[in-house]
Image 1: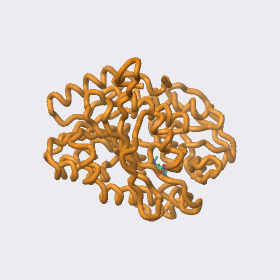
Image 2 (image 1 turned 90 degrees about the vertical axis):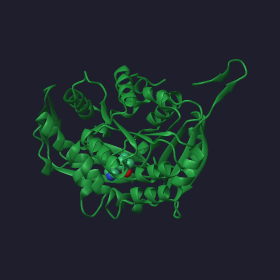
Image 3 (image 1 turned 180 degrees about the horizontal axis):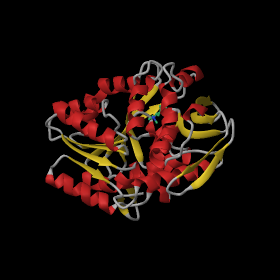
Image 4 (image 1 turned 120 degrees about the horizontal axis):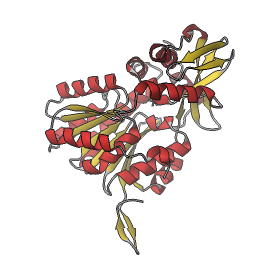
Amino acid sequence: MDAFFASPEPHLCRNLRDACLKRTPAIVQSQPNLDPLIDFARSCVRGFYADPRSMESRFLYDEEGSALFEEITRQPEYYLTRTEAAILAAHAAEIRELTGPTRILELGSGSAQKTDHLLRAWLEQGGPTRYYPVDVSAAALSSACAGIRSRFPTVEVVGVQCQYREAFPVLAQLSPVLVAFLGSSIGNFTPQETLAFVRALAAALRPGDFFLLGLDLVKERSILEGAYNDQAGVSARFTRNLFARMNRELGAGIDLDAIEHAAWYRQDQELVEISARFTREQTFRLTPPGRVITIGQGELVRTEISRKFRLERVMPELEGCGFAAERVFTDDQGWFALLLLRRRPLYSPRRGWRRSL
Ligand code: AVJ
């Protein structure tokens, strides 16, 4: 299995198990021994030296970045959130009928506004409702937890601050569980990362557990490019914030006025590529590593990819990773899909029923 998704997190398992046993609302933090600044600085240095220069998208979501992303979701051009929320609103009750009273773990929960539809359906159909939002942004996570607790006082909420893969080892303990991964956040992964992610998720779940996956679908270029180039310029502020964060946390001293946001659809790869373009040469240094970096005039630093999907391509891939499609929901325009998948039980004539791939 891909090492990137394989690291078990004993700390997180223990902390999360403790938080669940005590039934205390809690924020569980992963990797208490890794200095977040060193993690960020190392990743930036690696990203600036990579060819093409490209950053890990997870660092877009500090407090500022998470707030800017929320603002993006409210822009008229950004149809994704609105479309997915409508699909959730229409089908949450049916989803709950199919899954039964599972726990819900949400990867990349952000503000967790869309999750209201799920929680409402879970509460209406009875049983204790336990919700585990997972997010890298501590600020977004604590405000999402507070929001859920005030809107749904009977829901037990345990926030988990970590990367997606770090939450996988706790899934077996949460079964029966529904893992929600909404907003087409999976589109940030390369095709190889996507396969590694889905395989690792399948291996972490028990047979019969559910995976609710939001996917943005391939569509006309002008609509896609509009969504990532909103008129109000929020997308541009979101891209620029990654470099502002380097200034705030790593003392980089990058001139943000000399950075432009660039996003276009690459039809050959069916993805939106989002970059920062340096409009003049800049030299700066990131601490702690202290390496000097020079970016030339006109150079691009990629901050994200956002892949767009075709159901006929993606369904067999998911099935090959150990998931069966229970239901596929879409909107009238066919712009966005919400997939309810189920971890398949595996039967081998030689070894009988197996828990993992
Ligand atoms: C959160 C990854 C789903 O790709 O649409 C939106 C991020 N970046 N505008 C997306 C994003 C710029 C978003 N995801």
